[in-house]
Length: 351
Image (cartoon, rainbow, N blue to C red; front, side, top):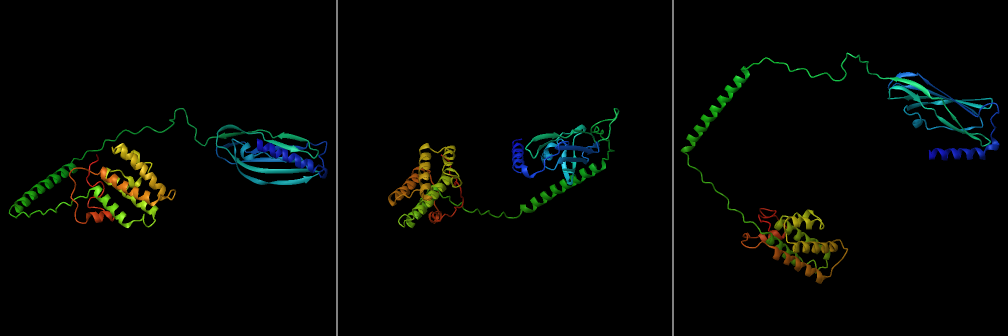
């Protein structure tokens, strides 16, 4: 409605500006006349109807057309034929054929349409078309009172003739197969009774590598590479945090590699790790994240202190008591990031 009012105000202004160049409407004829009709006036749901709109206006009158796509509801506008324009005796005659349809039934009405106009003198007014009745019927067939409406009842089950022979034959076949299997088993047992039983050679168990052994070996390799001395501080923090996260995974079963630093405390708490170690991990990894992403670059002295802190964390949280035997070269393989025979938690129990 606000947009229509703005358009109408612009229309009035345009007419007032050009009023001196437009011929005024005659006094004995109305400025605007609107005639409508619809064919046919009865149809079935979904049929196409022709809505004819005829406008008779003075040549100097400007008309603001309604929005037919919305104003014709409940009817829907499908198509429109270009209007026929004719000028005669200072008046303009326009006629348009609109194709409409409707998807409701009953006695419906094409609503009255509102046409605003402005004369050359700046006079404004409104003209309304007639409301047209259309009877719309359903396409469904009529149902008598004695007819059933809706789905039919389910038919009762049909009693099929029983033939027991397939079942008897199937039972005999199964019994024959069972008997054949029993005799085959007995024959194989008798045949194998005289053969010497081959000794089963079991491979010796592969010793598992403790999580702290792997972590300390990786820290040793990092210290030998000495990225701190080379000035590669962000690279150092990338490697040391990876070692700490792998240790948390292998020692406590916390999937720290795939978690953000903010997600780790809850996961460590669920693994029943001491609160002091949870606080240390959160503080240490947050500090390392700042260094990794160049938001804060610690000095060489602080970086070496962080290296020592990582080693102390592994030492104080390592599994105590009887420890698995480290196989030859296990420390070097772990330092290079190779997986042991049984990767993951390495068979250790969560404290």
